[in-house]
Amino acid sequence: MKKVIFTLFVVIVSFHLQAQDELFVKGDKVINLGVGFGNIGWGSGYSSTLLPISGSFEVGVKDNVFDEGGSIGVGGLIGYAGYKYELPGWEWKYTDLILAVRGNLHYPLVNKLDTYAGVAIGYEIVSFKESGDNNLPDYYDAVGSSAFFGLTAGARYYFTDNFAAMGELGYGITWLTLGVAFKL
Image (tube, rainbow, N blue to C red; front, side):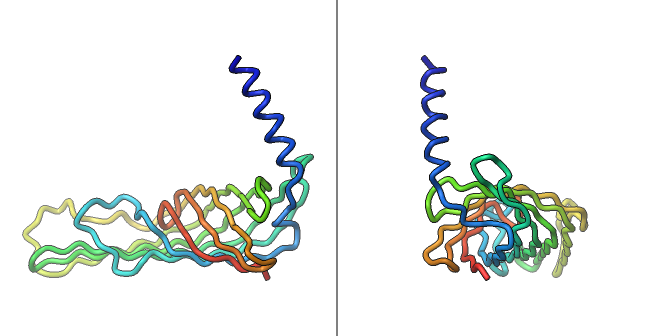
């Protein structure tokens, strides 16, 4: 019975997917601007010095990845976040800057919704500053700058041909990024 239900689901979804218009195709250029929520790796007591922000640019480079559509886009990503932790007479500040290239696989699932999944590879520049009277153990330290690898699942809902609301889940400057997208 499970196989029959799964097969029916796949057939219905496949029929539905074939009827969708491509919203991102070869030659399209899109800019995403977002604000992040759900900082990575911090517990209680930490606060943001600036909401995590990110921007990305993407160009469509290949169409018809699958028989029923799909496209590939490549571009760049920049993200910034700053956090601090304060105790009486002591403060710890941490900043994180991500510079990366990324590629996305787009597949149309719903009308007006450009859905995609992607990977980013780049460099994460981390800075750490401590000030005040530190009588605390040395376990308050930041990791150094290093290579960056991120995974993303996202969507852009187009209100007009060139303007969309966007959202991304995954490992980037934060776990959730919400913002706007502009097709050039």
